Length: 201
Image (cartoon, rainbow, N blue to C red; front, side, top):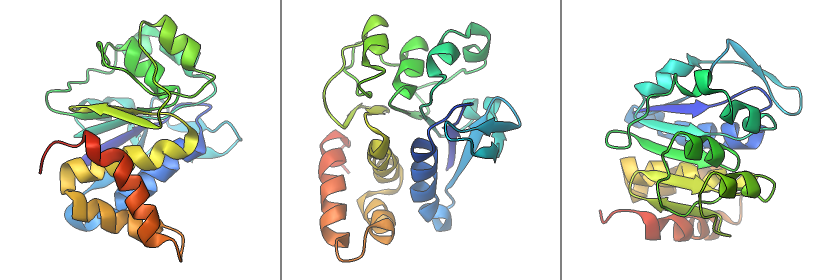
């Protein structure tokens, strides 16, 4: 399973790294999440410089595409030439967005009439793009999902893992990362958020 974690200049580290770290707990199943960017290096909102593991075009062939957020997302959403490089297909890909990543999904026409989650700062822009925003940490319909709030990246990752590898695999990956002494309750809470949006397994 190939997962593209779309990461642009000004990215929020929590969005990209939490999803990548959790999903890569499934490497033993042949899963690989990778930082995917339009340039060889990108700099985070806090000045962390990261070397891209895959070019932007990798997203077009990936099984899963996750849009992270960042401080420059509004200008990225207005960059038609950049967005035109993304030829995504919900019929063969799972696609998720985090906070302002939801705006990019809206610009690409991926949300249709489904409600979406985002952060409070991005909400007006997503509404302006014609999307109904819900005050929830996570929402999905079929192969499309959105999450709101930096730490909601755990829900996107859990959804991806549970959808593609099953509930047990997702629970195991989350259990490994969960705080000691809270592992069982943490896993139950996260899975309780995403399970209603999963197809029957």
